[in-house]
Image (cartoon, rainbow, N blue to C red; front, side, top):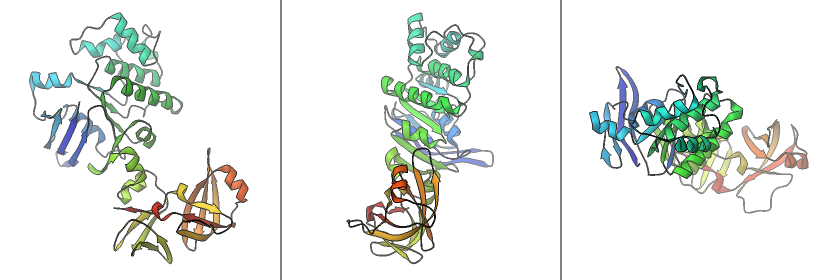
Length: 349
């Protein structure tokens, strides 16, 4: 189901929740809404699910304006969708009873074979007769997902589905959601504040802040080329510097960086830590940015090291392997050369 939100605004009394939100999700896409708590993600999902009406704007589903739909026409559209909430509600009784509830409220009849199939697909095989309220949080969320997908929705809406799940259970549930999306081909719109969810699952991302869209596009592009200081900071981009732009340059303090993007006046750039190469000697390469630096301190991470370096008064971070740290003999006070390509310098906004 293709989903288009056009100029959607929503206010509850004097409190403005959403302002002129517009984006599209193609049929079969996995789109993630990311943003800090309170930015309007849940309200936006409820509007897409036709549970809330926008104050202004429209919701188009498969090209049809469903914003003001009522009665049977609204019910008919909503039966083509399903939503999984952050904290799944479990009816008293068995897992099977809970799964049957989804089709039941839609007037659908499902047989034992269909129940067995969806339990297998969601990792609940053999658990149909378990008391649903005795399950772990992760297992309850699987039941909620099974209850939704057994209706074969054309649009699946997920509201922070991993938020109430134990950390160790998240990779399994994340993989399950991805598998169901691939196998069923449904359109998915998921709200989350966890960047790992967006990176692992979605091919489109919408970044929200205070009810406004800050950036939207292919997930890889949003994370690799943030268009504003807010987006760069929210996704955890490091090495954000305020600069003055020149012809093919960006100057921060007394340090001038070469860049390929064009910009004028003042603004911000970011340099990904993984783009900064550290070496004991000045590199003999095509990299147009090479500076002497001093190691200020090291951060030991599970899979890599983050090396904090000083270029005069500027502090940057470089991400390198544990083996590289040892090979270079890095420690606080070490002198190194830091180099990176001009194409690595990204302009924000």
